[in-house]
Image (cartoon, rainbow, N blue to C red):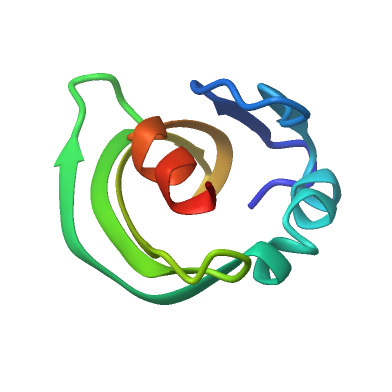
Amino acid sequence: MAPDAVFEFRYRFSGYPTKVVGREALVALYAGYGDGMALHGADALVVNISQTPGVVILEYEVQGNAVGSGKLYENRFISVVTIEDRTIVGWRDYMESLAAMSSLT
């Protein structure tokens, strides 16, 4: 992952950024993730090679439980990843927002 990689989140949650620039900023964003969500697995990975050189589209699912509510968390993602010189320089993330919100309430 490039130190200045750009991460875009194509979903809206109060207090959650839509864009983060830099590897360290991404690490800081997810530093407390385990306090709210306990992931148990990720699977159903599908890798699609784009016609655009250096772009890969990932489809995958995650499962876990929301720590506060104990509710089951199952979500599906699509991520559009841009790679240059074997390094991630961009990541656009799409997910099923309702699944995330439903597990937290």
